Length: 270
Image 1: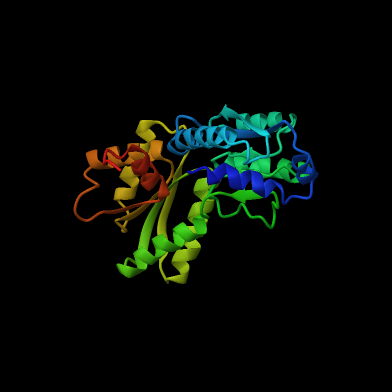
Image 2 (image 1 turned 30 degrees about the vertical axis):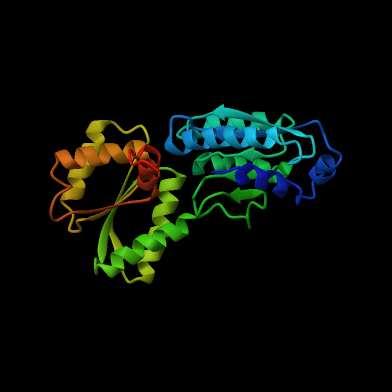
């Protein structure tokens, strides 16, 4: 992310007819923005660094906001705890923040979007859940691509290789469920289908995940779509390798969690 990330955020706020435009035009000394991230995740860790860097760039040049200082209050959260994320979002809305960056997970984004809509507070989220729509939530701004596009690409790969049936493994939350629904629709268009789908809770034990993989190994399809986060995704790959499910005869397609993880942890010099 570059300085344009927060610059565009501030400029976009000028477009909302909620009094913000008038406030910024008057040149307030300080403008506060909130942010909800999960620091120990790939997306959250990168976003925190990018936000702080953009904040420093903007405030170092008084001509960007005509002398107004931009402040960002960042809170760490757990994407798998919807209640905690909701509480943190509501705490922000009780203060003088004019917008919220995040959250990065679909479950919390769904909850907060309802409140943000009523309070007319822009919510710039990293959530890719296709069901989060600006039609339903006018103040929801997606900063990444929707899962609709990702799943259309996965379906295109499946169709190109003439794999008519696939197995889907996904995390049991809004992100996982809605992503697989989008994949199912995309595959149907290509005259393909998910022959077996299985979910797992975010707090699943290792033994439960191994049993899940064993059940998958008995299925007809050896083309496996893995739709989850990096933490669980890496565990699945490690266990699948131990069960000899990563060799000949198997095809694994990971969704964007893998590319995000590799991007953030690549040892290849830029």
